[in-house]
Length: 188
Image 1 (cartoon, one colour):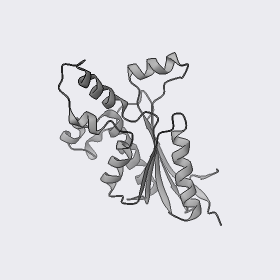
Image 2: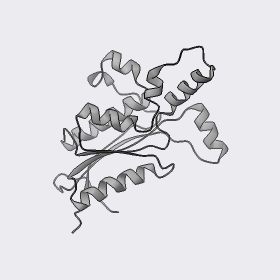
Image 3: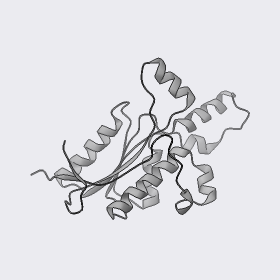
């Protein structure tokens, strides 16, 4: 029997929103080494979990179309010699798509299921479907689901040339099988 899946919290940062005060989450040294998308991902996730009253979720499932594209571009420009700056290992390490989910899980101490979906245009839906299915089947009781993407001038221009509107996303949602305190029921 499939269980119902409930939405317990939602936290989103929209393009143009003021950046939150990250000092409660990161030391100055940590924040300096993190790109804007990683900081936004960790912050929205922490806020959503706080709203839901969950310290550590059983799963972290993230959707991202382009990952930490700013770090990827910086690393590739330095590699090609297009920037005067030396190659930075941080840009390389933070350029993969699963960096966001991994960082969130590590910071939370979540040793459960951790997945990243990078299905251009369907990443968030895939992450949401995965987490909801696991909850519905009884494999887990709750999950943190995120949708994180950033835009750079190069990526925006490329998307516009293909007729695609560039969009940034920093959204975290907490799903659970527990109906108590739920904001909504998820239909899928």
